[in-house]
Each structure stands twice: as structure tokens, then as C-alpha cells.
Image 1 (cartoon, rainbow, N blue to C red):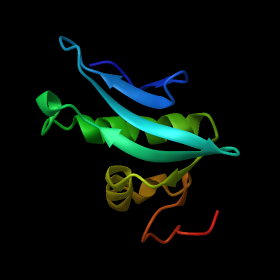
Image 2 (image 1 turned 45 degrees about the vertical axis):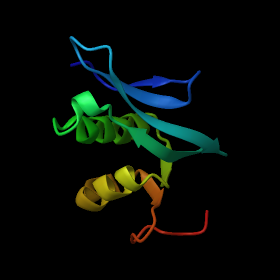
Image 3 (image 1 turned 135 degrees about the vertical axis):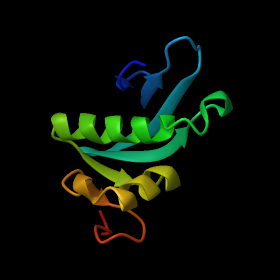
Length: 103
């Protein structure tokens, strides 16, 4: 399995799986210097294998490494963050969380 890579042209973070043409992706758009995570897709063939969690962890790690902050709109990313508060330094807004604010 490869690591998470940012595809700037498609405005998404991607996680490819060795031996498969399928790619899990987390889509975003920018609001100023913040990355708004809007939608996550894990192909059916990869479902139930922890690919979504690996993608989410990779996205948050990439944002942390590049000193960027995230606004969570995507329900999957919001749920992942609720279970992983260690990413509080990356997330500035998430529905129903302690970081919710009006950005």
C-alpha cells in the first residue's frame, strides 16, 4: 500500500492500494489558508479493510506536516476526528465537536 498523496489538480488526497486500480480519495476546497474536507470516497472493493481510516490519518498527517488547518464538512472525516482527538492541532472546525467555530 502506498502513502497518501495530494493531487492538486483534482483537489483531493489519494490513497492507492497495491495490486488495485482503485483509489480512495478525500476531496477538498480551499477557504483562504484552510483546507475544507468535503467528501471521502472509498471504493466498494476496498470497503471494510481500514482503507478509509488510513486515508484519514494520512490526510491529517499531511496537513500537520505542511502547517495547514482543516475545516471538516465530510461526515467520515468528522467521525474519524471524533475518535482521534490527537489531531486537534490540525482541525479548526468540525460539526458537533469542541472545535466548532464560525470560520
